[in-house]
Image 1 (cartoon, rainbow, N blue to C red):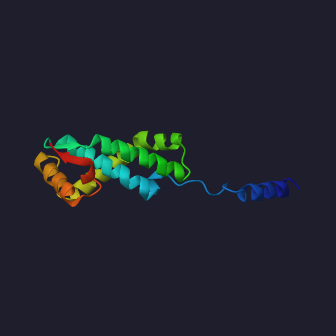
Image 2: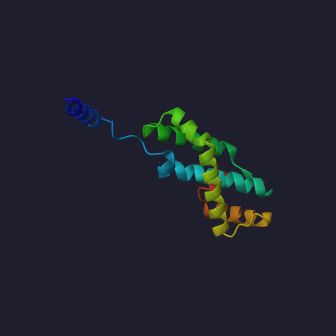
Image 3: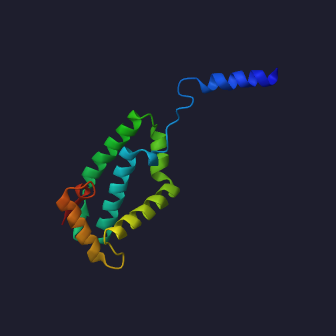
Length: 135
């Protein structure tokens, strides 16, 4: 009898609205991941290339839009903060960024390559370029 009751309770809980629809990790939400990735790359490029500066107000505006979008998808501010501040996610983002930059001709031993890439992104009006400006 106890097994039957447990099975019934488990079935009822599983069919409750929202019970099986937990949000995926924010890393799996392209609208969030892509914006954070672009911002991380723009920051790295501006740190390595002294002829480029980050567009801080633009980045701040994007951060507020990102928060609003994530909230609209059902993520709490605490979940967003935990994702953005996670050491694991920061390390993953760094590795992803280094791989992306290398694939696009950027060499950490040559700061000039960061400048070339950054200026090209600005010229393309890409998501990365939108977060950079020439000094």
